[in-house]
Image (cartoon, rainbow, N blue to C red; front, side):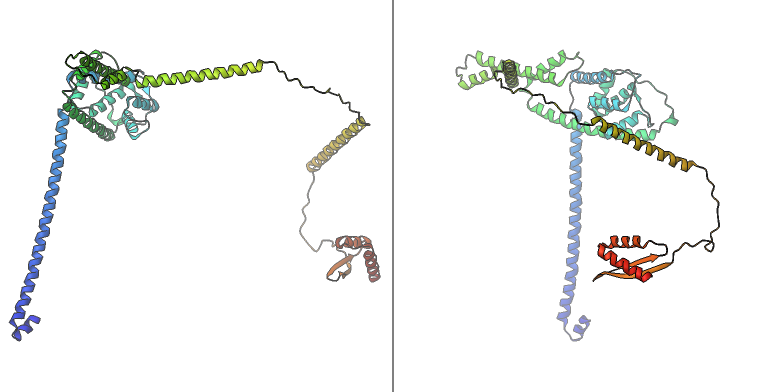
Length: 451
């Protein structure tokens, strides 16, 4: 509308300016839309690159973990020790013996697979009982399931070696009736257990990868140590089990051997004329007793010292008790007091006994009479309810007057036929606390009123 008005008035410049501004808005909007679209595409490309890098990193980790292998003999020895460790735990029971849930949890705790009463123990128990609510499982079946779980936890080569070269036992086919087992539930339980053991496998791979990188860096410096370890492993390959303290003990032997070789090289080197005091002090310090032995000796000496002090204290107490007591106080003579008998004692006791006997007889008599009355047979004659036939025993009123006892106190006295006037007046006086004069005055007034 504005543009038409400008054209009719001949203002061509204003019309052109409006057209340029509208075109400018359209161009700016298109530019902003293109800019947002380019940013969106860049974000998608960036996310794809990040995902691709992550996949490449995961693939590289998997390849490195597959490349990491222990030599064949060492791997076989370790798997043999693992198998013997399982056998030593499971062979405490017979093959045909059945384990309940508590003993089953104890076996898992000894193997270090799971803690007692956790989710993995419960799932494994359900798997062993074949989904049925059984109270016990066979030891042989438990061993086969543990072997399967260890295969999922170990690498592929270790699993093959465990089955072929270590265990060397073929699993027997067992005919299990399908109508008694829910195989879908068993597969689900097995899948959950495998996923849990995969986490342990990832931790094992990460630890071995870190150990391999460190081993490559220090390979040249530890040739002597690795050779000694190989000899130790070859010497101990026929042993059944090896404990943690034995491994540490063997490692300490390696360190001692390395230290001895270094000391011999320093002493036997003729070209090395400079021998500073630091080295001699260090060797002297190394030759001394180790820290744990020194602490143990100190603890033993303190324990012996405390024991000696305790023995000395007990001996002094015994000697003090055995010593003769020199204190002898002068005690007064003990006088014997004589008590005079009470007069009529026997008569009083006899009278009390007689009164007690009479009371008991009276109570027994009343109890007997009460029972006799209750148990006595009687007959009840029913009668119709009629007020007209009842005899009225009501007494006629002779006197009903109000008496002023004090200034602010009043009371009413009532006298009927055949009532004793004196008894009524005494009861009234007792209830209202009247003295004798007031009673006499009240008595005279009532007699005058009645007469």
